[in-house]
Length: 159
Image 1 (cartoon, one colour):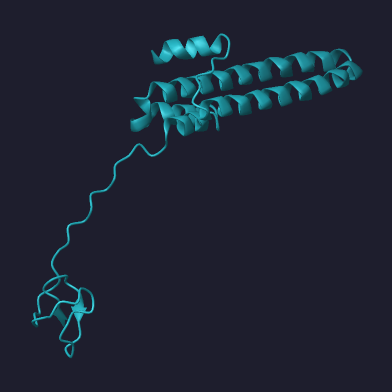
Image 2: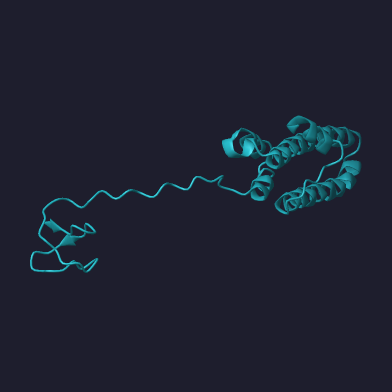
């Protein structure tokens, strides 16, 4: 098989011109010249605001991931939101455990009292979910919103 000496395109034997570049050909049987591949664009992947918002998605898991991954562990904005996500998730877990214990005590005292408190639990869960969405929105907007107490601790941790 013959190749164009200019561009390296494969040629048929009956043609006098390259179908790719249009130059007249001299029959050569060498393989096409090695083309230098374009250097891969090395980027950080996600922008800081998207990474900050994604740090809240799975709480502790994504928070740890963004604290460890190379391009993000050097960005203070992403580290802050990752740490705040971890602490917020931990606070929610502690609150959930305390609420379950309190609900168990109320249920052992009176079943009717525990059922009255159940809608309050649902309302608190909805409020925590809405606040979680709000935190992701603020991070996506590029703002460093600090949760009272938790945000200060997160800011101290990331420096």
